[in-house]
Amino acid sequence: MSYSIEVKDLQKTRDDFELGPFNLNIEPGLVTALVGSNGAGKSTLLKTIMNLVKPTSGDIRILGSYVNHTESWKQDIAYLPQNKLGHDPFNGMQLKELVSSLYPNWDEALFKRIVKDLDVNLKKNFKNLSPGGQQKLALALTIPRNAPIIILDEPTSHIDIVSKTILLDLLAEWMEDGERTLILATHQVEDIRKLADMVAIMKDGNLLAYKDKEALIETYTQYWMVDPLPTESLPGEVRRKGSKTVITNDETELEDYLSQHQLKWLNKETLNLENTISLMLTK
Image: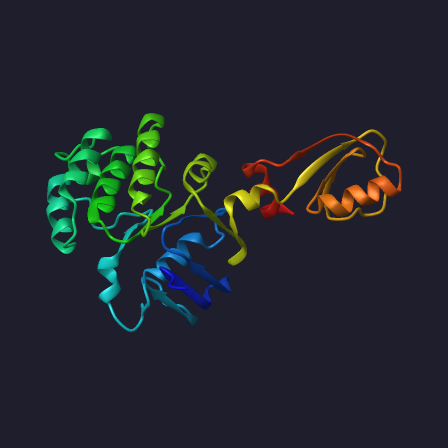
């Protein structure tokens, strides 16, 4: 299979933080949400993919090209970091002229549409815009690069609810091409729910899981019992709440056990996406 991004045996050690080692292969045509608590290593991973941070060991390939061997891949990827360094002295039009000159597939019509739909101010210097205004301008400078891969680090931070809805719809439309790749590092469950096909969960520099979103939602089931649970650990048990509620990652085995021990439940429910991710990050 041909991957958009291949991360092999990646490891990065910096001060007291260690990223990896881990492997991650991202297919074209999919939206991958990168999630995790603050300090999990999401931004470090993205900077390493972009060759802004050198890995201690391991390899990264973008559309088949090793990032540390050539720079030919740079026009194939559009990256929106959290910190927009070097933007402050320029207004939106000046930044657009600079950025568009670097990307031969720049989509001027899409740029104008984003500017209009998100009400982007092109006249003020970047430093004089509100945080939300800066984010909207940065998005307008990133998406129209028309690169086959877009990486967005916290793309909906600071922007208002209406603009967020417009942005998510626009990104969904952008992905209709079928061959493009979108990676979102986000804390926003709504971003994941609306856009993501795959979810990569990171904790303490490690990749806990890389799963199809729908499969991820089926990971855990919560049971509310009629009688108190036995003190022994139950099949697939990952957490219990009080004496009559248990969460399992193995419905079949747990229900066989409950049936054998004549234990009845009042109700059961699959955990939603937010609770599933939270449980994986805290258990």
